[in-house]
Length: 153
Image (tube, rainbow, N blue to C red):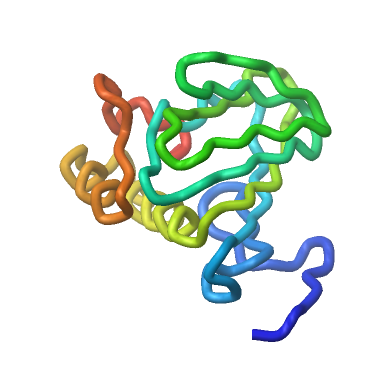
């Protein structure tokens, strides 16, 4: 696929606040999307991708990241990197919206999109979430269940 430009406000949207900028078919190395995080959003609980890397650039607001159990509040301009195998999660605990640019190994975007599809009509079946994560060589951290996934709301 040749190079291309995606203007502001353009891209494929799915789930609440996600706008895909580089589709997973465009590159075998990475995909990217913008994610608008509402205030007081708990985000996904700690989880692990065994085959995918994720980088998060905080465009505006402040986002709290948990990387292997260490939490850090990251203001605009910060980057958090979750290499494959890193237990990670993130949340917007502030009173203002936050925006992330998420750059990932392509399979991770497919997992996120399918996770939103599972939660479209309410809280998904825990076994379905577990199976979906396994399909993408990922897992929710031990002791965390799908009811803890604020990302689906």
